[in-house]
Image 1: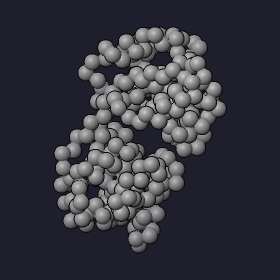
Image 2: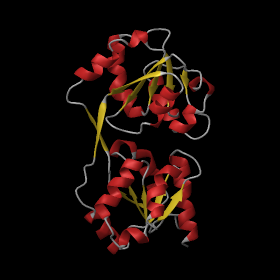
Image 3: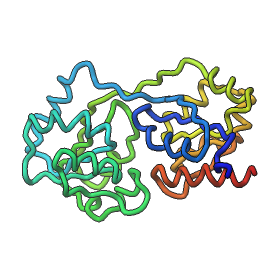
Image 4: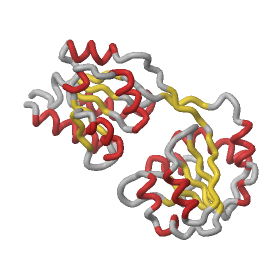
Length: 254
């Protein structure tokens, strides 16, 4: 019996260590996976500034972790600093909350539906922040929506940046060659930053217009849709939902 993704080539642009499960799911279904990370996570070379920011953690009411990478790169320093018992934790989603649980932090506020800044901001606790001090742990750069909204609601907000995101790719030749060899049918992109890198590298290449881009949030789809590219949005976050979207592709092209 033929597997559902037989003869289907899928490029995954996630950091290598975050693509393991999805890679296995696709390969188990008979698909061919092209590893093409457009973002890799790198620790900072100097944590002096980060440690200065967290030095007065005793004064904060909330600490928000943007990603599991923020947890992995920030929590060891916070544990050394000492975490006050009154500090409340929030996370952008369940994967980040699970990473916190691995460090013994089990009471964590997370969004109920979509796992993004907007959904976290919709929680009642994030509306009741007048006069509160909030620390956001993240990588260098990133969206300002969370901080800007919390400030508008009366909170004092500080960023604690503890890792860097780098693009390890210098061109899109691997993808172009795979498409020419009929080995590339879909590309998975799970961040706006990775999407920007892909579009910058591919430029106006014809092949990019003929593959299906799979994303896990409508925000990531905005730019490529404006360019006229083919984009599908998974029904929910997580590897299983993305896998289902890929399987739907296979059915629709059979």
